[in-house]
Length: 349
Image (cartoon, rainbow, N blue to C red; front, top):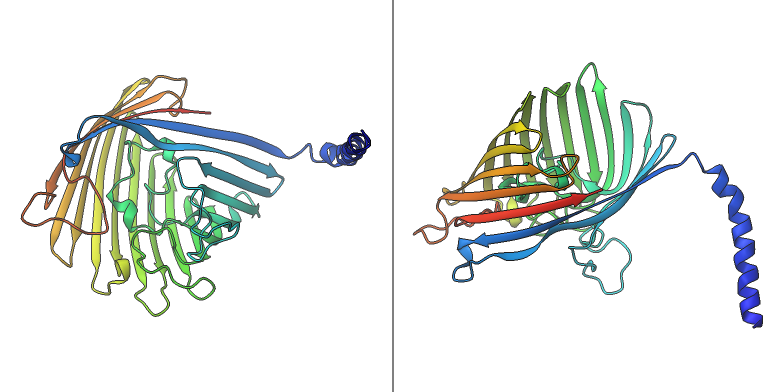
């Protein structure tokens, strides 16, 4: 009984002590968000087990907060592993990244409406489609170029927007790109690092253009370097996109060079239906082999906005030196090697 009384007394004193600070911090704005993407997929490359398989692409929840010029964000994905490869570890692991379940952990300060600084783990600013939110993708999957970007990394980034009209920039410096598929040896945290620089130009919502270059160094190995150019155009119901990325030194191979480009067209017939076509072309210069994926699909919007109640249907056509050919594409940029049917239903808040 005495223990219960002591516990109640402690709880009461803590509550009283917090009352004033909580009242004082009423200006802090916070917002929870989340989304779930349930999938049904049939992939001919999985023969003879090529029937429909049910699963999920993303199961995420997070929050954003703002207190004057101070901001922060946390996003976790329950569809990822909870371990970072170090038993019991609660810190950045040897690869320089947080546990897989943590997608973003960001804090920052906004100097003005045009500039800010971000610290933590987040997407490096290389790749237009990669830097599009997972709940706003035009097709069910991220494409072949995703394996060539520098992924999420822990570090610091200085960003600016609306400079001299529509120009913008991002400069990132941080740990080795431990999550990047193309970085074969992840480097030494504290010695090796990732650097990325991006410049962009926006003409309102009509057009967006960006150019980025980045590198992840490897102690005693081959640095991985990537350059990306992309543009997007939107007018009325029509959307067009183009992106080109080249990666050199993938998986610690000095002779490795790979390119991927995509061309996308979408047309919004009405508020509920959009047709899309996207073509990917990947080439491995080391072997001179190619792989192509063409997505033909539809986005059906069943909810009150574009992200809640979104149903995506994709059929993937494959070409080039695919699986089963005399030559098989084996580059870093992964795609489908046989036809596939992809269905995804998303709910979000």
